[in-house]
Image (cartoon, rainbow, N blue to C red):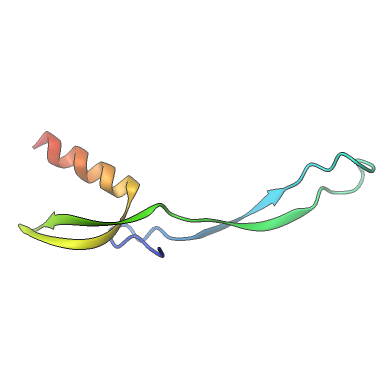
Length: 71
């Protein structure tokens, strides 16, 4: 799933660094690209008194549950 509809969190890009044990230390360890995907779920959430299906990340879902529990 692509993007959180609440906060806009989506796919981020980074690198894996392999620690090469063969060869000399003067050579740099190889780096490969990788993706960090947001944990996005399809949930039915009550917004403004109406229930709506939204794609929401687990961080926003947790914050929403904590907010509704304290009210």
